[in-house]
Length: 274
Image (cartoon, rainbow, N blue to C red; front, side, top):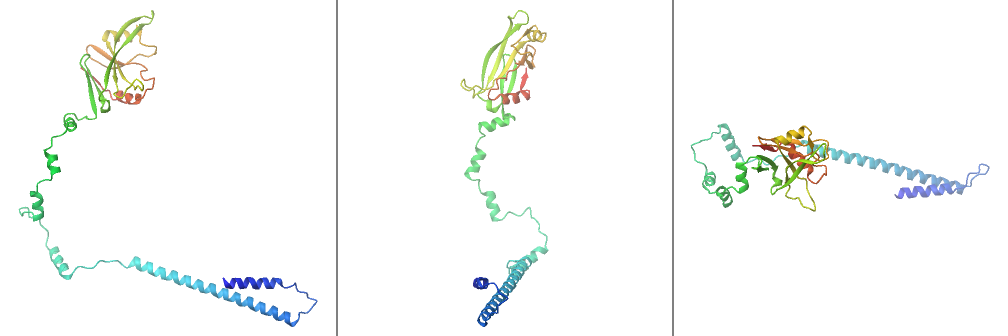
């Protein structure tokens, strides 16, 4: 830093000299000043050059030392203290003979204690504790994630997800209107399987099941009457000897909460007739 300051000061002095007048001769005093300043400039430049060379050599030396240390770390393995000669000889002798397991030999003290030791309170309680209701239900019913709604009046069962436990059955009536007179000529029950979280303030999508006699279903297929304003009729879910069960058209067009879940339930063919 000091050399730089001297160099800057020397450069400032040189620049302060007046431009040379070649028609005049410099006095001896002026020539001495110019000579001295040039010598100072050359000396400071030489010092700076030597300083750079020294720094370069030091940097190369440090890099070489670091490379040697890194090479030593990577190549020299780190080994643990070897065991005593007594232990090593003993282990060497043991390794010469094959290891065999004596099935008739009693277990050592630790193993025998573990075998004869009674299970702790938690384990013994778990072994002696009867299975809870949920576990016993799992054994009796493999499909533990579902529940069954059984209707003995019309003869069918309907499989529901476990989340529908506590459902309600709401009964309503469907009406069939004649195609020419616009009068009600057929009626029948419609069963609504209602989710337990359904409320009047926040209704959820019901699972509607229309119940037809075989004659009513046959007349509907012949278009002797229609149900609602939909251009398509109900979709059959199943039938037995007495009744036909169907899903109303456009039952989910209100897009109530849970309508997608109901669609997935119906995709799995949950109804079985008797």
